[in-house]
Structure formats: structure tokens, C-alpha cells
Length: 138
Image (cartoon, rainbow, N blue to C red):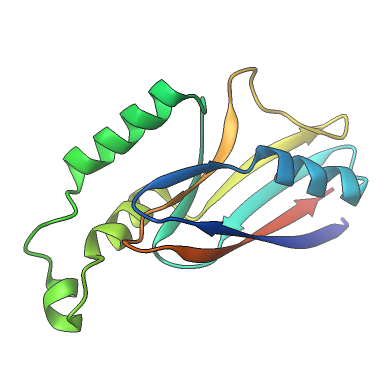
């Protein structure tokens, strides 16, 4: 069972910026030559996450608003108190969404739905350089 691993980097603005990474993951699948299998995209770090969604302005707005309601940026967070920090909300949001997403590969292509994209969400409270590891098992 061959495993192929690649990595790409991107700069983000933080503050729940949502970035479409579908094309970069598709490129990794194409470069791997895998016809069937599974592709996993994983973001390094504890304040970012990867998920799927319909990446369009309304969906982006609604997801950000939902996460703001569930886990507000301001609050009595122990992480912030103990570490003299300001990003506990980013850690909590990333924990809930998760650092990775696995997508089947069928016929050499990601088996995503018509309106489904892979996105990276950077929850940190300042700009960051992010690394995404893509691993294809075929």
C-alpha cells in the first residue's frame, strides 16, 4: 500500500480566516498518481483546523458567526490567564473542528460533492504561516 506525502505552506491573517485549499490538495493527488485510495489533509498547529464546506460568501460568513457565538474571542479563559495569552478561543475552536479531513480518491480524483470544498480555518488572533501535510494512501 503506497503512501505519498507532500506539504504546502500558506500565509493567513488569523481571526477565523477561511481559505479554500481544495486545488492544492487536488494537485497533490494528481502528483501522487493514485487512482484509488484516500487523501488526508492535516494542518500543523493547535489554532487552525481543516474541514469541508460550501466555500461561498454566505457559507463563510455563517460559519464564522456560528463559531463566534459558540466560542467567543473574549471570555474568562484559563489558558489566557495562566499563559498571559489572548488566543484560548483559537485553541478551543480548532479542537472542535479538528486538524484534518480525509477524502476518498476515486478515479484519480477527490470524491468531493459538487458544492464541497476543503478549507483551512486559521483561528489564531494574529497572522500566521501555516503548513498543511497531504498524505495519499493508495
